[in-house]
Length: 359
Ligand code: ADP
Ligand code: MG
Image 1 (cartoon, rainbow, N blue to C red):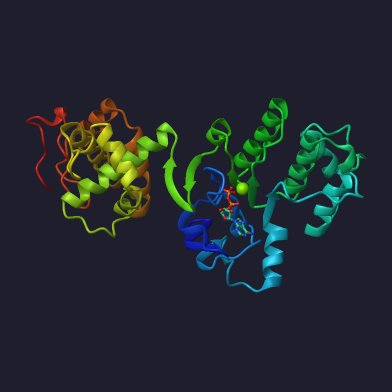
Image 2: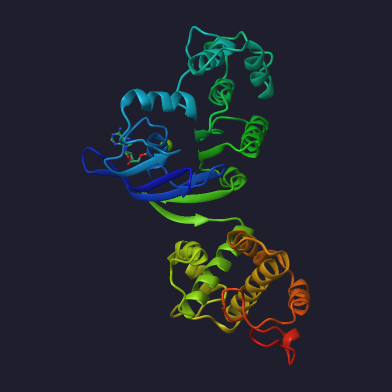
C-alpha cells in the first residue's frame, strides 16, 4: 500500500483561483519525490495539504493511514509534530532563541531535548561554529540550514521541503542535498519542491505540476524502461484476454498514461495510431513474457516456491535476466511450452524442434 495517497484533491482560493485541480498521486514509503513546475502551479499548496497545514476542498489526502481532511484538529497537530518535518522558508526561527535552542525546541515539542544530538545535527550541516548565534546574527543561507536541522532532528517519517536549496551557495547546496540523500537511504519519505532540474534529478521520481494539475512524470532512464516493460506486459496480457484484475496488469494499466504511450510511440515500440505493437515492440514484449513465464516455471518446478513468492520473483527476474540466461533456463527446463498457470511461453531460438510435450 502507498504511504501517501492523494485522491482527486482540489483546493480553491477566493476569486476563482483553483490552486490544485483534481490531483491524484501515490507516493510509496521511502520514495523521494521532486515536485517541479512554474511559479503559481500549486506546488506549495500541495505541500501544505501533505503537511496538514491546509485542507483540500474536495478529494482526499491520506498519509500513513491518516485521512488528513477528516481527523480532528488535535490529532492533526500531533501528526505535524510527530511525523512530519517541514523545511519551509516561511517557518521562521524563534528570534530570541539561538541556533542550538531553536533545534532543541523542536526536539522538546516532539519528545525530549537532547543537546548532544542537536549539536551534532548542526555540525553535520556546517554550523558547528554558529551554535550560539541568534537568527539575526546568521546569514540567509545559515538560517535556512538551521531550519533544515530543526526539521530533520526528530527523524520524521515524512520530510516536506519547499525549495530547500533556494538561498544556498553551491557548497551548502551540496551539503543539504547529501543530507537529504542520507535521509532517503535511511528510509524516510521525502517530497521536495524545486525549480532546479539538477536538484530534481537527485530524487527518485519527478513530477511536473502545471496550472494545479499533474502534467507529467519524469522517470530515471531505468525506471522509464521498467515502466515501458510493465505496459508492454499489460498490453500483451490484454491481447491474450487476461482479466485486468491480474496484479501485473494492474501496474501496467496504471502506468499506461498518455505521456508514456506517446514516448513508446516515439521510440518505435507502439504503432503511431493505436495500441498495437510495432515489430520491435512485439519482440520486446515477447522476450519479457518468455522470461517471466520461464522464471515462474523454474521457481515452481525446481524450487517449489509458494505461488505468491513465485509471482514476486518472476516480476523481478523478467527485467534482469540476459538472453543467454533465459535460454539456459529454458534448456534446463526442457523448453516448456506453458507456465504453471497454463499460459503459453513464447518460443525462443533455443526451442526449435526441442519443445517438450504439454503436460
Ligand atoms: P507555487 O508554489 O507552485 O508557486 P502556490 O501553491 O503557492 O504555487 O499557488 C498556486 C496558486 O494559488 C497561485 O495562483 C496563487 O496565487 C494562489 N494562491 C496561493 N495561496 C493563496 C491564498 N492564500 N489566497 C489566494 N490565492 C492563493
Ligand atoms: Mg511555492
